[in-house]
Length: 142
Image (cartoon, rainbow, N blue to C red):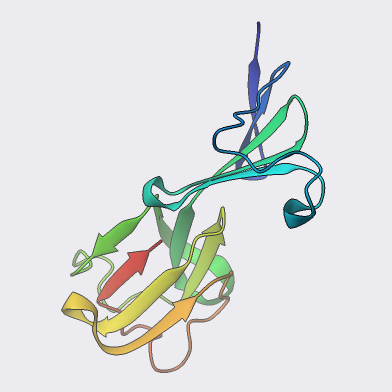
């Protein structure tokens, strides 16, 4: 069986003739997932959506942090589940906005070791808020 891979909107799309894994996926057509199948492996930062037989959409968790509001300026990205107790000097007290991909959530804290003021974001944040803007020193992505 041949498969092809293509990058589409931050997700990997694998086209295959019967690319379902019954042991991991909910039954196709089930009410729980609107007619497709879902594979969720949060421990490795992986979420698969099987919208119809033969199509697999792979969304890897990814977060990009920007040093300006509205996703502008320099940026750095992390993939998968990540915990950074102390941001590198080049990014400490610099983050102003965040983009989240693949269902990623991020907790940003003002002090090292996830201390101080913290906020959790489950979607893009064109601004991280007055308390954390240019004051973040640690983060967790899951």
